[in-house]
Image (cartoon, rainbow, N blue to C red; front, side):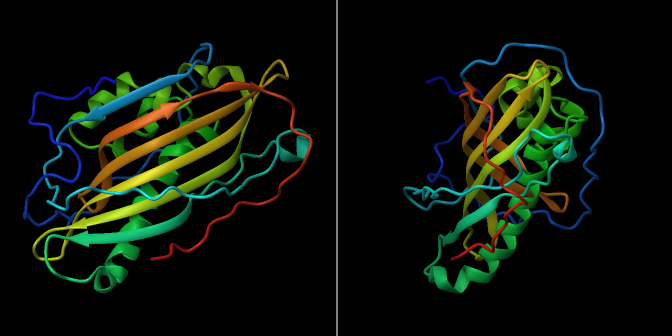
Length: 262
C-alpha cells in the first residue's frame, strides 16, 4: 500500500510528540455550497492514502479506532417528491480522549465531546458537498477549505475518491444510507486537544440519469488539527468501493444524528 505525502517528515499515527498550543483564535472561513458539476467518468474501486504535515501529534502508543455498528439515514430516491436534496449528518457512535499526562480519560470527556462536534461539522460538510448536493458534488472549490496545508493540494489529486469527482455529472440523485463516525481525541501535556482521528463509514445509493443505480461506499480515517477556528483535515486514508446496485424498494424517511457517547 502506497503512502503519498509531502517532503515534510512523516510519522505513524500515535508515535509523535508536540506540545504546541493549537490555534483556535480566528474565525473559520465560510464553506461554499454552490458550484457546477464535473464531467462523466466510470466508477471504480479506489484507495488513497495521504500523510503530510502531521505536526501536533502526541505520544500515546498504539491508537485503537473502534469500529462502529450499523445504522441508516436519509430517504430513498425514486418519486418526484423525493428529488429535493436530502439532509445529511454523521451519526457519532463513540468519542474518546487520550493524553500524554496521567489525566484519566474520564476527566477529558467534556473536551472530547466539544471537539468531536467540531470534527463532525467538518466531515458533514465534506460528505454533503462532496457527495449529496448535486450542485457542489465533485467540485474542489466546495471542499478544499476543509483541508489544511499540503493535504489541501493532495485532495485536488484525490478528488475522485474524496468526492463523486468526475462521476458527479452522471448522477440524477444521491441518497445517503449510512453515515457513522468514531472520534478519538489526542491531548498534549497540558491536556489541550491537538489532534483528532475520525474513523468514517459512509454509504449512499446513487441514481444515474439513465435509471441505473450504484452503491457508493467510503470508509477509512481522517486526521484533523485545529486551525483558524475550525478542525481541518491534515491527512487521510480513505477507500472507495462503488458497485452496481438494484433499484431501492423501501423508503426510509428523515436523517439520523445522535449524541456521541464517551
